[in-house]
Image: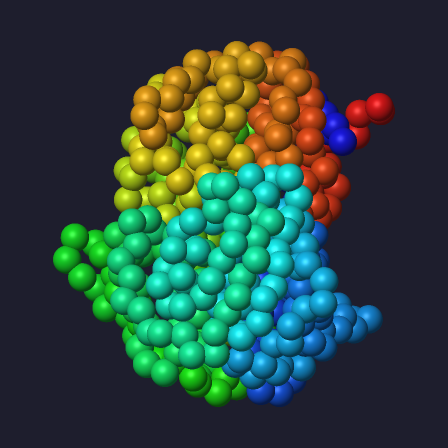
Length: 441
């Protein structure tokens, strides 16, 4: 599928964003581990999250969507999943696959997991290695990739794991496996990653600890074998999805866009901190808390941006937003240096290389030095390029944002995966004044 973004004038309007993808996956999984009925409102109904719901159903969890959009999950308790009769196909859902591996590690049966071409290419070693040490067995393709088989155990061993990367997916998989052990499981991260897992499990009755260590490290612990309480989850708007209309507004003179009900978890707002440093006119009001997460309404006005240096320590709070930040950098006066982006190489694609290649194709001066991305902005990108997104939804949306302000339209191939995280992206953007449409085959 190809989408084309053509140059547009000022953007304006107020929109509500789709539900947060990270919290949506976790709401379904954690509700399945509770004892009793949980209700979820605002769930992201993108393909990734629906794949997680389908996998849970295959393991005996009643998951139902009501006509009013509320999802109801009848929890089976920690350790209560049933052996699936068929392979679990997670589609493009990396979060769903990695967290599910942590759940399956604590069940004494063998499951088979697969996904689409993009998911099958992604490395799983960082999750598999600690789970193996806890007692689960894995048989995977070369490079520890899907398809794979996981054989869990009812008597997993507690683990003290020091992670080499700040990854919420790795941390969450270990903590979920830790729910099935008779003691304390801990994870030490070099920098804090998003903490939805800890917040949500603590709210359901799990015993979760968090301790700051020297050098910015953090230790998170969980006591195994709790009985989790069912919850009423309200999923906030996804700050990663909000990034695309936010950047589109920031680079468009005269734009005024209001993004309502966006999650403001401090471990997710690195992009907005960076845009403010670049001179973006961003205001947040109507702050409130729902289900343990702060949310608010973000208003972004078009403004003149300047280049900045983004420190590597900020990466965990905005790892999914670097592609669209690179677009903002292309329109900012001067040089923007984004440091420490090695983690982008193991996302849905090698996002570091794809962003550099795509920006260059659109006439932007860009270079990669090691794990750093350097963009020289200050002049309007030429556009006029055909960008292969390699089925990466965030690459696709980023270049559609760029096409809206380039001198000539930008066409994106492989845009169908946008539906995995941001259903209705094109219509939401066109409602604000963008010009995005399908290209006839």
